[in-house]
Length: 222
Picture 1 (cartoon, rainbow, N blue to C red):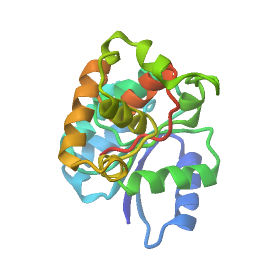
Picture 2: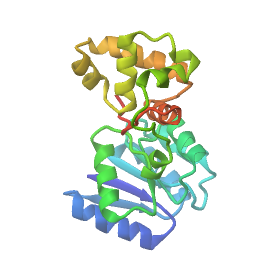
Picture 3: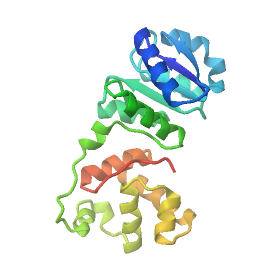
Picture 4: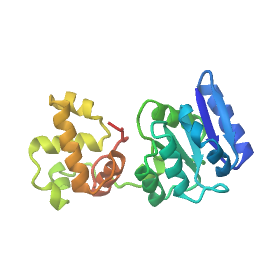
């Protein structure tokens, strides 16, 4: 697997490479110590199978750097590696199409699990972001959850079931199988929910549902 690790701390790059070597076979790592090094590689970014990018390194200029990488490698899984877990940073990165957001405080095992999640086609978010999302008390009536948001009060029973499964991080296919619906029907429902919730992605929708009191799980991309 061909990976680009862009971070200005050599020890961190070396440690990350060591952890990944233990978890992934045939690993080939290219290191970049600054965003200037990434720019030099911009025409070759599509050749990588995974890109790990630090938000704070020389030449990065914030999220403009993320946008540049995504523009030159739109299909390559892009993971932000950062000391910041601020929601606004995570959501901004998601808006730009990243497929993972990893905290530098994670253990090696957690890191490998996060990268495996990304490489399987899902989106990974920091656990702390999900832990900070309030959950309903055990005795709460699910109907009250829908009454708490004006735009959700008129949902049909079937739509409510789809939304609850979405909040658990189920994929469209899993929701369709669970409710015996066509996957295209589920896709239409999910698209409508994103619009109603004002969410730009499934991941952001899950977090917003958690803020409303829904029991939340992981957030898969499709």
